[in-house]
Structure formats: structure tokens, C-alpha cells
Image 1: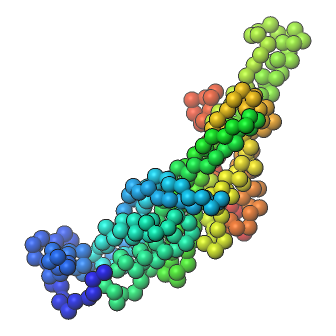
Image 2 (image 1 turned 60 degrees about the vertical axis):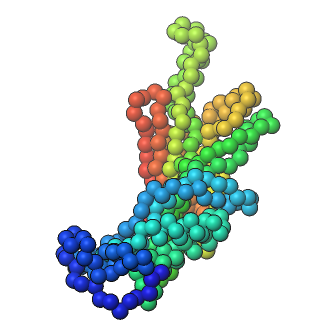
Length: 316
């Protein structure tokens, strides 16, 4: 980080810099540094930074193992009204530097966010930048045991980890998981069984006596908020979702597993409304979760449109 120099920048032109070659502030190499010129607009920017910075990061799993996941990072700080801009490359440098030292966990977020607030200042004697944010989007892989056979496969969860630090140094974490499961329509299942019974009793000769209820792959995009000192592992949230919605899609199946999955779906016919209420009970029951919201989609096999629901924690 550069130390403040005695040279005073000339008054900046309001708007774009018209005299692009005449900059009173230079960097260590002698190149013009327009970013450090004062800003005459008088307008603060709540979040400024970069999005979709690709980087392979190591993540610490709940069992203590470390696995690498390809990640898209978004990084932001707040910019005061007197500042022209931020040094964007420092976001990348900080993230890469911390990633070389340790795997991603809650303490990783704590170190990166504090460095954003410190290292993205123009000068060492300035106060820390009030707010910083780090968002990591990545596919999270865990081993999933097959339902009946002695097999397992890799199950992937599209995840987002977001950490925000405010001017008091308090960090709030948000974890988003896309949880995919199978949903069988209760009405369709009931009508299929009603038809099969009518056919067995000779009340109808339509079809061949077998009817299939419509079911579909579905998704519950679940976001929870928690404090850094009361952390949830990604696996904790997966277990919570799996208990509420046991018909999770499967990675590796043999015939035994496929039949078990069909039985499981028959035991758990659900509308999107059922899912919303099941998850509401499950998320409210965990005291570590301070807030939550869920967007549910059933990608219908019957319709060309989707069934959808949105639910969030009711304010206490």
C-alpha cells in the first residue's frame, strides 16, 4: 500500500477526466493514477467491486477433509463520496493470497473481509473502509450413499456463501443451497390408484390397468443467515433439508435403489405448498439460523409451466 505523499492533486474535472495525460498523482512506477484524484460529485457508492472472478478454491468440509471447487467470486466495498474509485486488482490479490494460505471456512471470510476494508484504502493513515462483502458461488460435492445397494456416488449442490462486514466489524454470513428432490403429485397419485382399482373391479376397460402418477425433479433454493460465531456447515443444512424432504435425487442407483426410490416417492406425495410448510418448520427449529427464505420450483412433467412457492421466516 502506498503512503500518502505531500503532493496535492489538481482539481479534478467534474465528470470524465478531459486532460487524460495531466494527472498530478503517480503510482510507484510513475504511471498516472486517476483513481486517487478527489471526486467532485459528492456521491457515495454503497457497493463497488468486481463480479465473476474465476478461481479454484479449497473448501474445508464438515469431516475435516479439504476439497477443491471451481468458484466464481464477487467482491465489493463501499466507496465514500470524496473518493473517485477503488483499486480493483487488489480484490483479486487479497483473495488469491488468502486462498494460498488456507481453505475456505468462516475464519477465511473474516480475514478476507478485514483485508478488503484495509488494503483497498488509498493511504495507510485513512480509516478502514466501512463495509466489505465477499460472495463465492461454487458446486459443492459430497458423497451420497445409495438407498439400498452397497454403492455411493458424488452428489453436487450449487452453493453460494456470502459474508458481509460492517463498520463495527460485525460479520453476517448467508448460505444458499440448491437442493434437488423428486416430487410426486398427490392428486395424480390418488387418481392413478383409483383408476387401477376401477380396472381391477371391471368398472373400466380403458388402458391396461396400470397408471403412473406424474412426478418431477424439483428444487428448493434455500438461503439462511447466521452469525460467524454460530456457524453452520454446508452439510448441516443439507442434512436438515434431507430430513424434511427425503426424496432427494440420487447419484448412483442399481435396480434395488430405483425401486426404493419409487417406494419413497409413494410415501411422500407433495405439492409445493407441502414443501414450503415442511421447510418452514425445519428451518425455524434450528436456533443457529437467524433468518431464512426458500424459493421452491417443481419442474412439472404434466404441464409446460412450473409450480412455484416462496416462503420466508416470519419476523418475531
